[in-house]
Amino acid sequence: MSTALHPSRWTLRTKLVSSVLLLFVVIIMAIGALTVWQLQRTLADRIDQQLVTSAQQLAVPSADRSDALNYQGGGGNSLRVDLYAGNVVYVQDLQNGGIRPSALINRLGAPPTQLSVAQINIVRTAGIGDHPSTIGLGRAGDYRVIAVSHAAKLRTQATGPPSSQTVTTIVGLPLGDTYAAVRRAALAVALLSGAGLILVGLATAYVVRRNLEPLRRVAETATRVSTLPLSAGEVVMHERVDPADTDERTEVGQVGLALNQMLDNVDGALTARQESETRVRQFVADASHELRTPLASIRGYAELSRREREPVPTGVQHAMSRIESESDRMTALVEDLLLLARLDSGRPLDREPVDVTLLAMETMSDAHAAGPGHRWKLDLPDEPMEVVGDEARIRQVLINLLANARRHTPEGTEVTTRVAGDGGDVVVTVSDDGPGIEPSLLPHIFERFTRGDSARTRTEGSTGLGLSIVHAVVTAHGGDLRVQSVPGRTTFTMRMRRSFQETPASMPSVAP
Ligand SMILES: Nc1ncnc2c1ncn2[C@@H]1O[C@H](COP(=O)(O)OP(=O)(O)OP(=O)(O)O)[C@@H](O)[C@H]1O
Ligand SMILES: [Mg+2]
Image (cartoon, rainbow, N blue to C red; front, side):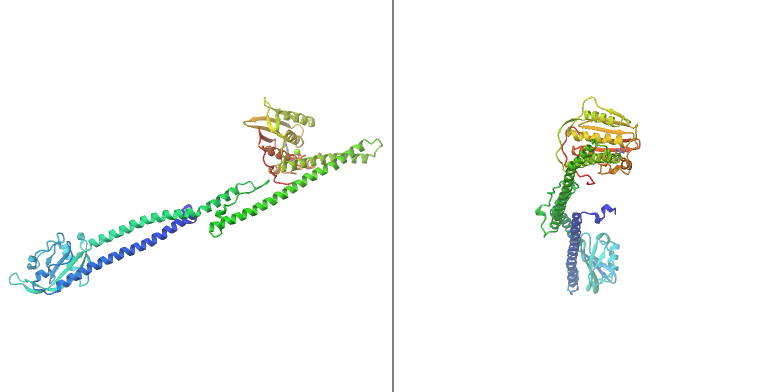
């Protein structure tokens, strides 16, 4: 049996219906067999009764034996064979019924003409006694037979008067009618059982289906919940099993109730998670914001000290310039963190038409100025490409991507920015033929604080937040950002819709 057909793989409905049907078949077969057997016994008993009655009539001494020999019971196909000293002296016609005139009685050993010789021999040699027994007479079918010995007038000599002799008469009744009646009864039982089976099958299937219906609804609820995006953002889970399907007294109700309790629990946990996430975000936003003022002061004082006319020792001068550059770096970091916190909190973005072609040209020329050692290429369409969004953020995306192409590749690397339309989308790619992103880094490249070893050792500030900002901005615009990188070709592909529906803020897999 293939595993798919194995009962363990059946649905509960199939199992229930087939169990009920199996039970029904067993019971109905037992009842049917018993009924038919009982009927057969009753009919057989009646025939035996008739045979015994006939035998008793034959045994009664009568003045005229030839009358007594007239077999009373039976009907058309009854059988009678009279034997004297093992020889047949009378045979009743099996085919035509009726009793032959006793002419035959007078002809001792006359060959039987109505029963075939073979049939007569079966009767003679069957060892029939005074208890009814069954013999088979070939094409004539089965007969219930009994033997009785009685006195009869018989001419034993060719001439002379008949004398009283002991004759054995075998009388029999055909079992064909009994068999037919039993067959008819069996057929009726079989037909009724078949009809009953279909009826029981349909009724069981209906009842089982009706009773399992709530289970299907519970499963549907579970399936709907399983498709909800629960991994990030504000999640409100309203899905619950219908109260009608949570009746504790039924098994299905218990499942429904358990599912609802589980959903309540998950809902509570998600709300708690969301609250703690919001608190963390708020903390980062607040902390970044609070850091801005003292940082501005530090930068201001450092700048002020540079303008000092009094001679300052070289060591102090160096320290002051380090303080200034580090505070610049920290300011950039704080700005990045603040921006990420704001994007995380799903703060609405500006929605204005932004000409991406123009942005690409401007940021490219800035990058050229910052990295004259690189070869900068632009590939722009003839007509302007506009998306609806926040210009400052989209500009930052391009700045970050171009800064990476400049900072993480050696001089002489060719960097190409390409803007193209693709149906309702605008596709911007920034690619370079530099050494590529380290493969171990690639799967986590958009996570916060992910940066390569080369970037860590650089003196120039590198925080690992650049690409997470790019990702967060593109996602917040309902766009899609991909990266492909092998040594010699690194391509960032950004796809944004010309008009966008804001997506709920999504928390990247690594929290700040
Ligand atoms: N075009 C590129 N070629 C090679 N490596 C790259 C490229 N772009 C990014 N990387 C690698 O990906 C890392 C992450 O980049 P990301 O912009 O997030 O951070 P960063 O550039 O190190 O710091 P910052 O926050 O200042 O941008 C980089 O440290 C660098 O190792
Ligand atoms: Mg960067």
